[in-house]
Image (cartoon, rainbow, N blue to C red; front, side, top):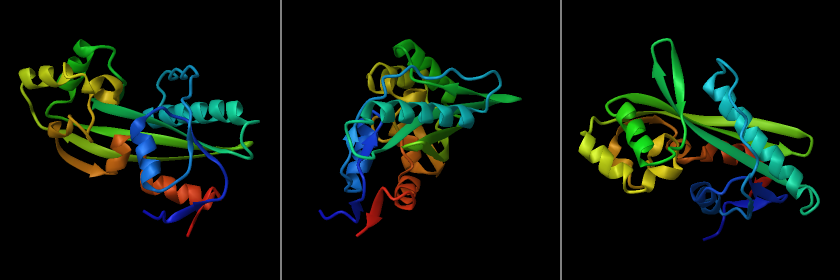
Length: 206
């Protein structure tokens, strides 16, 4: 299938996520994927979750840009970080990737029957300059019994996903409603990404 875009400079995806790779491939983009093997920054006390997620995305993009500095001519590096944010009275808490099935089950119980935010913050590293952008959605879980949540936790599907679920796969049944960017919940705000890549001269419309 012909791509609606053409490449103007090399693009590197600073992520090992197959879901993010699939999104860029679906746009018909030619890119290199390289995992950002740097240590993620720790949140500052009281830091807004979106600010922390954006800072993490930038750290990944800058790290990979340094690694590719001499290997590609003038590369643009796209980093991304997805956070599941569970509100509570007076604040909120980020749910990361579960360490094991027990933690996955505990996260799913916290989310069951409630509405939470999912934010994917992105950073495009362009030489000495970085561009931040993001997409988000509100996601509401149906109220499922513990036996169902435990079975899904033990399926293995939640273990590499923020908040212990994947809306694009086995965890789709958990969600009763979504308001906002579906692709951001999966891991990349596709419309915003394409717009930024065009604006910053990485790709162009055919």
